[in-house]
Structure formats: C-alpha cells, structure tokens
Image (cartoon, rainbow, N blue to C red; front, side, top):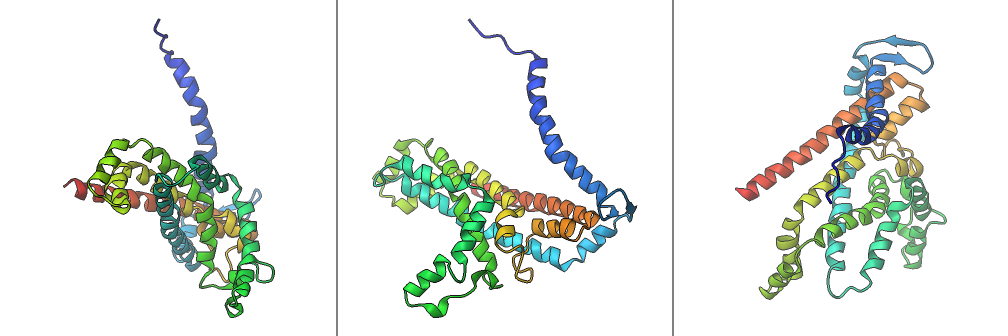
Length: 296
C-alpha cells in the first residue's frame, strides 16, 4: 500500500520552523546592523543619524583593511592546510596498507568537536615562552637560540594562530572527502592500477575529478569559515601584537564593545558580510571558469 503524500500545509509547517530560525538568527541581526550603521550610537536609547558617515570612515580605516588582509591570509593558508591536507590524508587512509580506518576517522574528527576557545587555550600553552612544549622541544634538541615569545612575533603570529585552525578542522573536511571517495567505484581505481598509474596519478587524475563537486563545497565552507574567524584568535592574541593578528570579526568586536561605538561596529559588521559574500562569490566564479576550461 502506497503511503499518502503529505498535505501542502504539513510541508509548509515543517519548512516554516527552520525558516523562522534562520530569519531570527541571521536575517534580523543583519538588518538591525544595517539600520544602526547609519547612526552614531554608543549604546543606550540615544542615537544620532549621520547617514553614510560610518561607511566613509570604514573605507579609510587602515586597521579594518589590514584585518581584511589577515582574513585573506587565513583563507589561503587554511585552504592548503585544511582542505589540501585533508585530501592527502584521505588518500593515505584509503590505501590497502592502512588498518583500523574507523579509528583514524574518529580521532581525525575529534578536534572538530572541541570548542574553539578550548583549542585556543591549548595552543597558547604550547606557544608559551616559559612552559610551552614548543620551546621545550627546541631546548631538548639543543636549539635554545631559537626559543622565543612566539605570540609576540608580529611576523609569525598570523601563521601561528592559523595552525590551531588547521588542526581543528582538518578532520572535519577529511570526513566530508572520505564520504565522497567511498562512493567511487573500486573497479575504476583497480583499472587505473592495472594501467600502471601511481598513487599520485590516481589521486590527481582519477579521484580528484570524480569528487570535484565535494571539494568545491569544502572550499566554500573553508572560505566562509575563515572570513569570520574570531574565537581562537581572541583567546590567543586578542588581535596583537600591534594589530599583527587582527581579523575583521575581532576588530568589529573591539570597536563595538571595548570602545562602545555600536554604530561604527554595525558598519564593520555589514562590511564583513559584504566582503565575505564577495570573496565566496569570487571563489565560485573561479571554480566555474576552471570547470568551463576543462569542459572546453
């Protein structure tokens, strides 16, 4: 006996709940930020309409654009470190020489379940100049001259704060890519081996083209996630030293709450949204352009 198709009202009722949650959590705060960005507002009931003055200030704000550059750096290094390394690990796990594949999947995904604040504290302890594991390891190897106060090094700090991000989410992307590679017919890979393809050639010329849509999803997730990076950087450096690790979300937080400039902070939030959409859209256009060239 065939099951009855649900009524249109039932479908609408089920869809209404996530839609209302989305509107409440995303759309309303965005519209509210857009509204307050046109005011000089320090919090409280009093605010003064100033038009687009906050946006003019934003366009000439060197710290904001420095923060945007840091976010782009995070995006680039995490695309390589999160998605790129996840793909390499997936190919290693899928070889016949690796045992206990389920254990590798579990432990690889585990850091993704830990809060970013906790991971920030863990890596702050690793980088600690007096009791940190990094300086201890260098000392044990007879490289005392290489020890330093790592998070005070303005030239290295962005790379140092990106390492915890890579470590936390590499397992997340590994699980996504593993699910995609598991759908590939084993006979295709066996045929490639019979034709003399090496592991590298199989990965690049066989596996990667077959999971390119999943890789594209991972890239979009990676870009959007790192454009709003905040938690672990707040714990580790709070944007220092001297704004060397300042990112857009951190700058918006400091302006809005530390300086109590809610109006300009709202303009920064709108700027983050617009730039995030632009970067993600640009990445998708590049992917389509590459796919078009491959088809051509």
